[in-house]
Length: 142
Image (tube, rainbow, N blue to C red):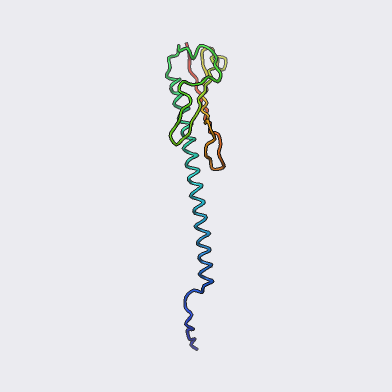
């Protein structure tokens, strides 16, 4: 037995509306994903800026002469020369450092700790937060 076509080939209006709603929900999900990716990228940039500043300062200290005045006495929460530093697109950071002239019982073995802290709250995926980087090294002083 042969069936005759009814002339109603294609999509009904309801099927079309359901397809459009499904497409819209998918596109909204992609838009939210894009916003999250932008926030994560910004967060990464500020974390990198803080870590780069801290590493640069610790390298400057390590390159200093071992008889430099900075290594003569214990120092706590001293402000680094040039602080605060502003990184374009990365925020503004305060830099402080500590010097401990006797490390693990060894005189003239200095523990240097550098702290880089954002002056304001910076964008993060979970909300705005303070950005910090802490780096330490040891140096033999004379």
